[in-house]
Length: 88
Image (tube, rainbow, N blue to C red; front, side, top):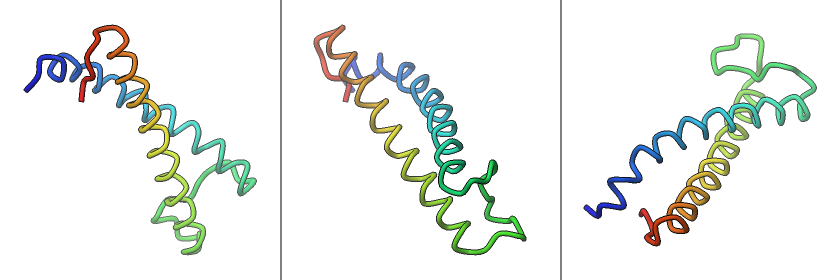
């Protein structure tokens, strides 16, 4: 395993935590705008229908994937800029 990949591990873990916080906040805002409801449904919410549950889950997954890709790419690009090597 390359040294740059090993050195990037702690950075990747920190970026993962940040990604979760950013994605969670983005999803909450998106859900408020789409549904005019302050809380997104959980899969076990008895009063919510299947369509609403699946829409919320799909939106949450898409937002998380997009934020993760953006943060990972920015981290790798910054690492290359600082060290001269790509961490992946």
